[in-house]
Image (tube, rainbow, N blue to C red; front, side, top):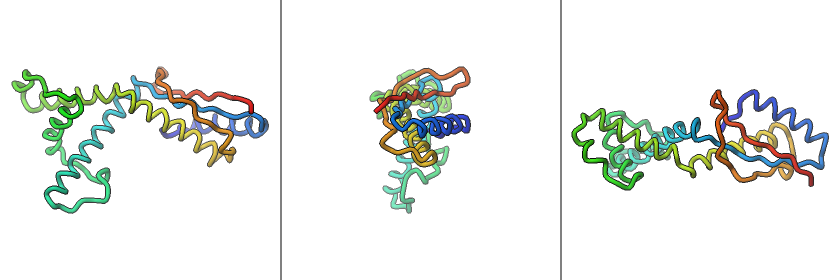
Length: 177
């Protein structure tokens, strides 16, 4: 949900135009795209799940843990066992019986792919990303552009399509008071 330098430049121009027209207000429609955002947010979600699981394991063992699970680095050799539990809890089923015959790496890859696919298609995670993007835009306009907070509104986040280069464009709408 970080803004590119091109986006910041466009927002700076928008701020100038809005300051010249105080009767206008701006509505921000945060957007995410499953094709480009889905796999990335799924990878991040899986990493957070590893951290949370590892954090609980360390606590149960009575080991010293940081204040937050996100501060942990999970050893790669711990991940396959965690992945099995994550698969069962996320997909609410046992892994297919035929995966038992696969070697450890293939089985782990299949589990991982299934979990990633599940989260990559999560409307909730994609919606949250759209909302975070809208929030980044508003924060920039208010904090950097010094636009009055009450002139910038959020409208519902949407699921859109990525541009050819993978960028996702959030729609901005002008309205008069």
